[in-house]
Length: 153
Image 1: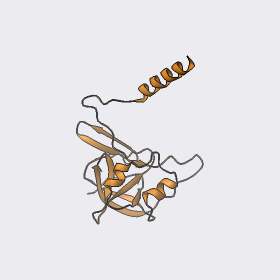
Image 2: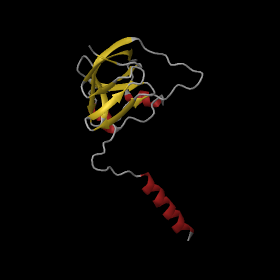
Image 3: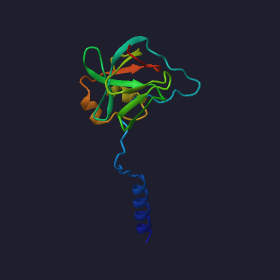
Image 4: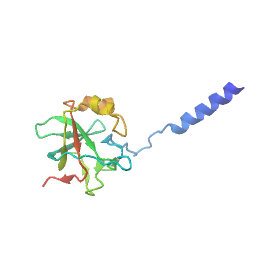
């Protein structure tokens, strides 16, 4: 009898956690977003100019660098990604700008030559990078983008 109740409770819990898309409902693309900085600590920002193009590919937000390679951009905590009837978007809360597929951007930031695996080992991302995003990248490279992204003029 206890086994049946446990099974029933587990089944109901799993059913409550599943989500079936309704017609017209869109999934937000994956964006690599840093965890918030713990209270009392400060984030160190890299200061290189990072121009590029945001690309939404395989439900992932990627950055096409000036050399043409698709890499993983990492955004500051508070950056959000979503989708609406016109497609996927990424919102930077500091600049107040919302970017769409193929938006040319200017930002600050940089790279320490880190791979996605090295970044994940540091445990700084809110969510792990999905396999589909790793496969869409053309180089196993990470670019950290500071808050305050602006459209390229």
